[in-house]
Length: 173
Ligand code: FES
Image (cartoon, rainbow, N blue to C red):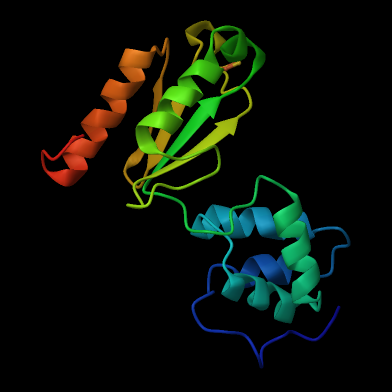
């Protein structure tokens, strides 16, 4: 095993340290480390990349290259509400593309983007496991997650409008 990398480790990565320690000697585990980093922090910052680099010996440029290659990785902070719109087969045939377009137009963000106010991030994901309710969207926020099925244009606008109203104290669009 390599010597424990301690000298150049930045503060603020206490949760990531055991992940790096566990995987740093396992070949091909960079994607796992990045996945866990995103699970912990919600995104992968430059500082996190530097931390992983110092802990694994992998050059930061290579880590950055892997992180940008895979669309699953977020290199900017996620919004408070993570909209995970299913694009699985059942949802696709039930017009999930139209729902995505409604969300994009309503919030002014494309798939993978975060609204300027930091409230929403839109992500299309594979099957959420409740195909009978297609089209389906799960919304995660710090308080938990909720799944919404049988979405229509009106319903998705109402769901988003309710969140905006709640967050802005009645100043919904
Ligand atoms: S395909 Fe969307 S929930 Fe299964």
